[in-house]
Image (cartoon, helix red, strand yellow):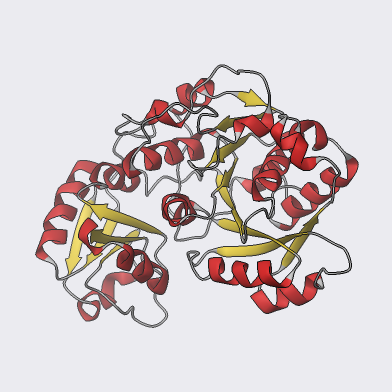
Length: 372
């Protein structure tokens, strides 16, 4: 795959985003189908679709929606809908209320929803999402990295993958998705680089200009990154709406967005549902493999692959682990002496220039269609 091909690897029912300054303006009305009998969700959807400049058709149940389902540009499904008709495209967005909690995310996984909008909190995000749903130009690919167990090396893998992609001319952004990880920037560089961090977006509402967004981020190793602060000071974390706005702007600004999601439920809910691809990173031993299987059950229904770390007499066969998890084996992280110390000293980019690391990263990116 070439860089140009990477920008066009989106599923046919995935809304596209255009990386131009005027792309947040309302477009010609898109055909939006809402399937729900919930009066509150109907009213909220009507208001949101009107703000997005769209055209809404409401069906109170699946049976009523059958004759227009496949012709809709976007399908919204309320949380009162528990089964989809056979051989119909998955709903683009599941709508629900904040009081539904984790049950809403489990329902989204069961239905195969691509996004979740918790109302009324996500109203602004949903309006913008719908306003660009008919855009012919796709945005960047979001690739999530999840550690299947503690100490799997997911953050290290994420940094090396971003570095390799940038080295091949792909405009790349690395996102630190774990507010409890101590700040990904500390593993990237010891310098205090100018640029915004996550707390700077805490008050963000609505769209972010992609050019200004790209220019506001620190750059190291050829890629831009957005990190949590690597300090002990308290900070205000962005809410779900702010995170959604940042990720939408990231798609508009870069060809590849690598997200170090972390292992918390908070991180999975905030970022995993925005990914086209997810790489599960775990160690090649029995207990970590079992832990990885549990994490796998929490992931949304998107394309996933396995990356392993570890070797030695106690290691389990890599293919055996991949088969037990029913995931394709995409690569094995090379064992580099001093990685733990390099992480503490901000030297992972220096280690990422080694031939063995570059071979690993390039192999994983090739298998994910990033480049030839």
